[in-house]
Image (cartoon, rainbow, N blue to C red; front, side):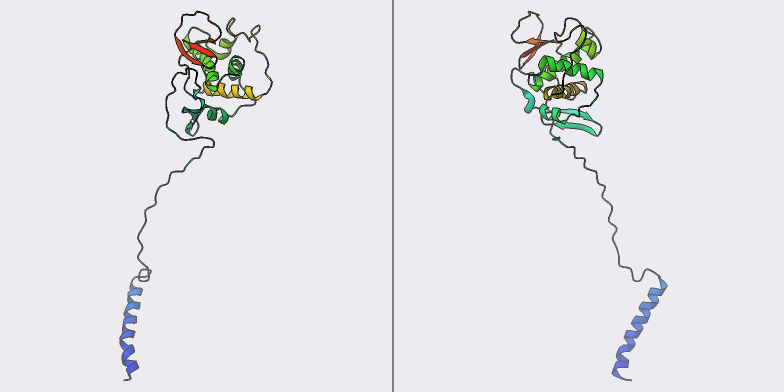
Amino acid sequence: MSFFSRATGPVAIAISLFALLGMSSPGKAWDVARTAVPAVATVPTINLPGTVPVPNSPIQPATGATPDEVTVATTPSSLGVVSYASLAAAVAAQDIPGNADSELSCLATAVYFESKGEPLSGQLAVADVIINRTASGRFPSSICSVVKQPGQFSFVRGGRLPEIGSNAQYRTAMAIAKIAMTDGWDDPAPNALYFHARYVSPGWGKARVATIGNHIFFR
């Protein structure tokens, strides 16, 4: 027997045994062991344009300073709660409808004529006064009725609101009205029901809540 024959004999036996093992377990002999890796659940991340996720902080009653750029509040969203870094950011993020309903239009008109030159916080305080009146039981229960109530707002003539042309100040008033109606920002003058300009002194004897811009607010 040659050296080659003697050397290949054990190899042939090993190959034969290996083939038999493979035949005895079809599909298993040539598999490489695999370790199952459990799937990791992922939570989709929702990025909301124009928003800054920051912790909430209460707004203190203003005393002449404007909190428009230094406070935080939230506004409802169909996807959860949206946080804005400032009232200005909240105003800029509002989608203004082309055909606003009557309540929103009445509130925006009041904000425009009563406070269009005021800081955003002062405009919001005016809007909140009107909304607070609707829930007080001492005034009409709808926004338009409060705005049109005789003797309350001088821009109302014969129960009718004046027309306003499209302009940046009215767009801001609409945004402020929308924020107020959705309770999207803390009331800068909590529970106030009245306000007047700084240059008048009606002697109401009511509790002063806040002074913002050119207005003083009372409850």
